[in-house]
Structures are given as structure tokens and as C-alpha cells.
Amino acid sequence: MNIVTLLRRVAGRDSSRLALAHGDSTMTYGQLYEKAARFAAFLVDHDLQPGQRVGLFMHNQPEWIVSLLGIWQAGGVAVPFNYLFHPSALRHAAQDSDIRWMVTTAGDVDRVHESVHGTVAANRIISVGAATGARVAFSEALTTVAPLDYVVPRMDGDDALLMYTSGSTGKPKGVRQSHRNTAAIAEAETDCWSLTEDDHALISTPLFHVGGLQLLAVPLLAAGGTITLRRWNVQEWLRDTVRLRPTVVALVPAMMFDIINALEDEHLLLDSIRVCAIGGSALPQTKLAELTNATGIVPVNIYGQTEQSGVSILQPLGESRCEGSLGKPLSQVVEIRIVADTQNREAAPGEVGELWVRGDTVSPGYWCLPAANSARFTADGWLRTNDLVRRDTVGNLYFVDRADDMIISGGENVYPQMVECHLIECPHIREVAVIGTPHDRYGQQVTAVIVPTSPSVTVDEVTAFCAQNPNLQGLQRPRRIEIVEELPRTATNKVDRPKLKATLTQ
Image (cartoon, rainbow, N blue to C red; front, side, top):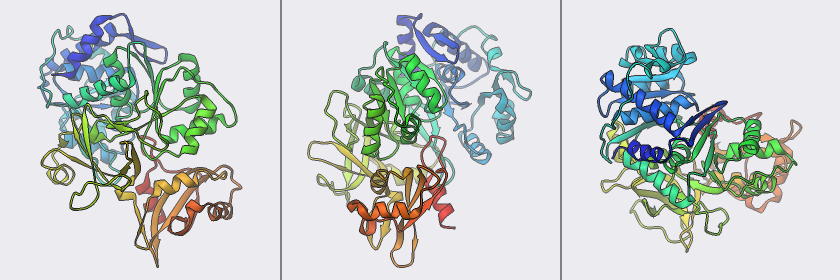
């Protein structure tokens, strides 16, 4: 079933409820779906066929959500483009997805036109705001025809989204996400977090990423709640949280660090938040405790990938927290395996292995990439995540590292994020990323790239801390320490490890 049918049904229960806010503008559910139906009518009137793709190149703003819902109602596939894609990445993704239309801001029309020149979409740019070079302004597209009074049918297995990976290790890959994938994650989160129409999500993670779209926006709309859209700015986020009193938020570790650093020794009680989901990498327990001490927020860990519609493991709110754990699988929609070796042996409790996931939220595969599909998806539907985890005796899962990030030093495996969790306890370190760099004897050495708490911090001070910490001895000890002003980041605020490695191994 077309997921927008589910969403429109929720809207029909009380069309006067507040659905969306951004800056000083607001939309009720009735207004939101009326605008979406108008955009759907525009697309159908301009011969968009079921299954054809429409690009979205914007950050968090109301037109993003209106466009998405309209595309779905018209039977199309939404293609959210990373707003920070460089021109060649945007051009590749636009050509690869064969988009029929592109919705973007007026200020980005020239940038988009240059990137999609020569494609069908080059002459079908819809601008939010009037702009030379656009086919039509978004506001005009909503007034050319009457609202579409039906939903174009789509089956559970049909694509609803085509989401492109960051492309930090090569060209961006299109990840297909079906209507069932998207509905399943909304249903699972609603169940685990008891989402209702009384919930309000403050969304500062980008909508072009699963952390903004599937983790927050779609589940809240499916529950009949309210979403407030923002771009990330820590001071504005703190003010918004005090003023708006959201109940649901999501952060990546860098955003958590920003909050802790912004508050310093100040305590700011943010007691409206009942769900604060944090994911993206292993989470240092000392920083989680600092966040709780500073704000009262008790975060829940989550785990997922674009290929898993954002979430497959989380901490249920009703269960006792297990320190360092990601939580448990969303067993209503996925099943997991932990594979210990090339013979596909199941890992014993405590043993590290690769996580495999199968189920309702798992992508049907990559767009037009048969080799990648063969490498990552098994014939019987398992996704090889390339993430290393372990499981305890009661089923809690613990993230160890990305298999690609693992450092092999002196023939032994060293997990960077475990080293980071110990280094971040150093009072001289504000942020840290650990990577492997070449070493004449060991093959690779542990290299710590740190952002210091003050400009006066020296390598010797960090080295002295490592020497006194039993968890940073032997092959775990950083043999190389680099001090930088900031860490390179991807558009989703994760540390850009490939860029770090390229910079430090030149």
C-alpha cells in the first residue's frame, strides 16, 4: 500500500491539529495534505508516471515535507539529495536516478542547473521562491490545478524513496527503500517509543538523511504528532528546546558534544524530552553521563543504516539501560545474525562478528548496482552490514566498529571507536577521532586526531594521560597524536574518516 494512504488517514482524524512548524510559519494537518495534494496534481498533470523519480535538494523546510507527500500521492519515488553534495556527486546522483523533476530553493537553482545540465530534470526545476532558470515556482505549481482527490496505488514492494549514501569512499550509491520499509520503521518506532498525537519532534538532523526523515519526521506524522524543522545550531537548539518543549529529538555524537561544550558547567534542565535518540557511532559513556548531568536528558542508543531504513536496533524505553549497549533488535520488523567468520558461523555470546540484518525495514537493494547487491545482500535476503558487534547473554547488542575502520597493528585487531571512548575521558580532549596510519614495523599504528579543550594543550600532555590509562596500553596506545582545530565532517555531522586518512597518509 502507498504509505501516504496511512498518513492521510491520520490527518483525516483531526485536520485542525498542528502538523508542522518552521520559523514563524505553521501548517495544520489539513493544510499540509491539501498542499501535498495540489503538488501531486501538478505532477500527475505533467505526466509523472508511477515509479518515476523526483529529486529534492533542500535542507529542513516545509516545502520538503509537502513535496515528499505530494510525490508519494502521485505514485512517484522521492529522491532526497544531500544538500552538501559537491557538484560532481550531485550530477552523478541526478543522472543515476534519472529524476524527472527537481525541487530546490531559488538560491540553489543555478547550482542545480549546472549539476544536472543535459538531463531531463535540467528543464524541470521547481524553485521555492521565484528564480530565473526554473520551470515554475513551487507556489505557482500548487495553484495551477485542483488538489488530487485520490492516491495513486503502489504496492508494499514498490520503491518510495531512493536515498543516496554520502559517497565518501566513492560515488554515491542509491539505496532503494520501499513503501513497506518506510511504513515498517514508523510502526516499529511508534510501538517502541509509544508515540502519540501529543508528541512533538524538534528535527535538526537533515531530512535528506534517515536520521531526520525515517527516525523522526515520518513516525511523528504517522502518529499524528507535530514536527518542528530546524538546521543545526547548538545555541538555537537549546533555546528552542526550552521554549517549545519538544518530547522527541535525535542527535549524532557531534551534536551531543556541541551541547555539552556549549553548556560547559551550566545546568539547563530539558525535562520535556522523553526520547532522545543518539546514534552514528559508539557512544562514550562519560559524555552520555555529562549530557544527563547537564540537561537531565537520558538518551537512548539506536543503530541503523540507510540500507535498514535508519533503525534496526534500539533501547526500549521501558527496559533498564545496559551501559554501552545499543539495545535490542526491533524484533517485530527485523531479525539478526552475528557472523563470526567466512564460514558464516554464528558468534557465541561475547564474540565479535559482523552483523547481518533481514526483515521489513531492510532495503531491496542498491539502484542499478548488481555487483554491490551481490556483495552486500545474500540470496535469502540478509544484509551484510559491515559493522562489527557482539551480543551478551540476554540479547543486548554492543557496537564494536566498522569493519572497514578496524586497524590491524602487529597482526592484532584494534577497534578505533573503543580507543576513542577511552581517549575522550582525557580532560585535555574536546573531540577525538582514531584512525590507522602506516607504520614500518606494525603495518598500521593507532593515530589519534584530537581537538583540544584549549589552544595550549600539547601532545606531551595527551601522551601522559595515555601512559596512565590501562586501556590505552600496548597496541591500543596512540603512537601518533595530531592536534587540529576541528575534525572534518560529512553532511550528517559524522567524522569524515576517509578524508582524515587521506590527509594524514599523504
